[in-house]
Length: 217
Image (cartoon, rainbow, N blue to C red):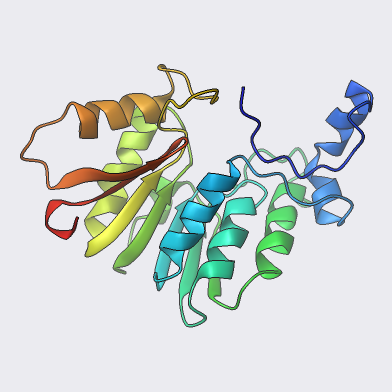
């Protein structure tokens, strides 16, 4: 299996218990290890390439902030990066080291404005009225949740806007399986959907699938 980028620099011979302890986001927040990415280097580079000309970027699902940091590093300094994540899994909400680790990572990169939206994506979209240049959907991976995110957020994409789905494609030695929600949604909507759909797959890199409007391909 292709290894996702793991920025935990510990000896390969380290005991499993040590690796499990270091996986806690408190170590990323404290600067004792870099953030752990959940994507490949090729995916990271593709996200940065698309963000480089985007002034309004929305990422749904932030985790430790590795992809968000890359997006902000690549964005124009007068752009705004909107980061949507409820950060609801912390055992101690008042501390929430996952959110702290993400903030530390993102704040250290680039100069684009950052807007943190600590909400579930379906709540965050209520009242949204900004045109979006680049949308990254990487939140709840249930098929119905991916569909809800697409239906709720895609109307705000500009005519030349681009959306990316993570964990949405099988690739050699990769981790997604046919039953992954993003894989099932992308296959059903963009590979097997109607030819009259205004959206088409424009690029595929490892597990990332990018879609654009037909008249802007």
